[in-house]
Length: 121
Image (cartoon, rainbow, N blue to C red; front, side):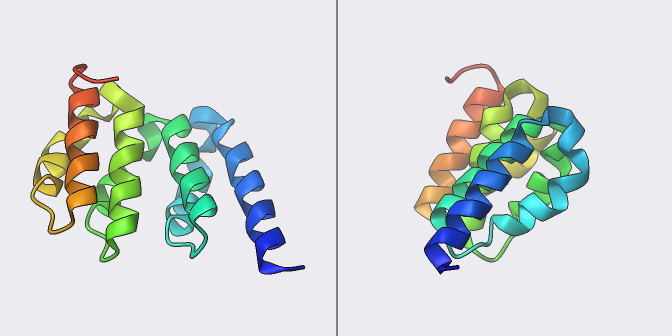
C-alpha cells in the first residue's frame, strides 16, 4: 500500500472515530498521537475527531498545547475552540498559548478562547 493510500485510509478511520462523540474517550490518546502524523490530512482528521468527542478530550488537548511541535499545538487549540464552552477548563492554557512563539498557534488560541467564551463562531 502506498503512503498516500495509507494516509487516506488512516484519515478515513480517524474521521469515523469522531462520530463516537463522548463515547470515543478511550481513543483520545491515539488521536493525540495522530496529531503528530507527518500527513496533514491525518492531523486534520484527528483534530476534528477530538473536537467531536468534546469535553472528554479537553484535558489531553490542554496538555498538547505544550507539545514541542507548533503544528500539533495549533491543532490542539483549534480543537478546543471547536468544543466551545465545554472546553472552559482550557481558558488559562489558551491564554498562555496566545503568547506562543508561533503566530499560527497564537491565532488559533485567540480564536479558541473567543469561541469558548461564546464570542466567536
